[in-house]
Image (cartoon, rainbow, N blue to C red):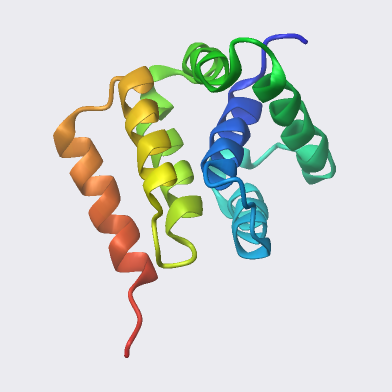
Length: 137
């Protein structure tokens, strides 16, 4: 399999976050689709490729390098200036059901390490996600 583009790598990170608890919910899959449709970083991405890219990620997870291999590939494919965007996209998927499970927390920790995201950036991204998902009641 060839090296993923930055957009494909961003999708990989959302997919592994969703799959972390071995249950990719419809809500999480819908959020991935929403992010791809609405975030500027995906402006020229052909949405018809989304399922194929997600399947490619699933295949990579089955290889010997597994999750770590996907994280290494993604970190190499995503420009440093988009590392916070990558973390925000993964966090968006984890937070969509208003409950971040332990497995998702672990994937987010690994992602932060592979992308070398500093604590202030992590705090800002997490606070923004919390604000976006807050409800009136």
